[in-house]
Length: 379
Picture 1 (spheres, rainbow, N blue to C red):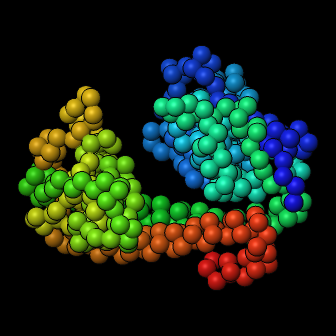
Picture 2: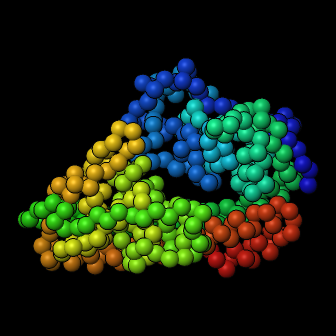
Picture 3: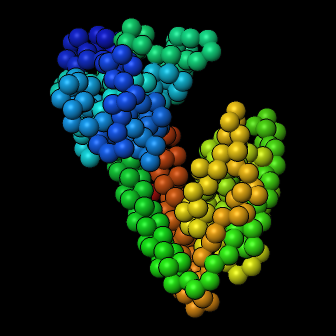
């Protein structure tokens, strides 16, 4: 297996590195609510593009003016600022997305398997190299010159494709699971809307639930375990004991104001969150969807550090369905949430298997054939 710098691979096999457009090229007033997603560091997950409601978009006028920043299937996008060790491979359905200012795009020629290279960029060794060589003291920053010096292993194309296919089978299953989760959540929300619209009674959140303050739990004081730790941005790690001993709803209080999360079992909400306790009639599952529709994100009570004022939240109106409608919703939603939790756990197992196989395949300690046998047991 040959080891080469990224620049050498691109020079020999074809391809290029491209930094996203700076503010002088793409101005903030050119972003749109509708259009093609703009992929910057915030949209680059660990291996996958993550487009959300806050992802900026651009229209056809920008695409025609700046076609060199349009992404194609097989491109790899890395974070340029902050999370410089994160990278994502563009799937077919993401063809045509637009490169944002805080992203760097790597495009390989046809004699290199880009998915194989994408997996290599997610390896521990490469991530460590990117962090170590990034510029900047207050915030890590990546540029084309530094990235071009990245050392890569370049096996024969057939071996690249075989490794990518093996690991890709796991990622494809995870992607299918993600689609199943989205479908299940959509069904549950549709059922909630039906129940809420049938309601002949309304109240306020403060009459049906208590928003309890989460408790501080610094990372240094956590003991790894099976209990998920929730901050205002979602799951931030694990701990060996819970603050809440059952499934329930966690609400962003400081930072990501009004974000609503479902904890599938015992969990630990930290002090940037509220955890929600139903007190009259309504289930936690019903409150999960109701809170997501209350516009709590707009109730920022602190201009310096975004914060959700509990009394303002308590005044929010909430629809109260009849007992029969509420029971129908609860029965269906609870079944769907069990499916969602089971599917997420399966995806976590698949991701762990993929991450364990990656360095073994790269080093040759595990053959592709042996990896295929192992994957057959979990896919």
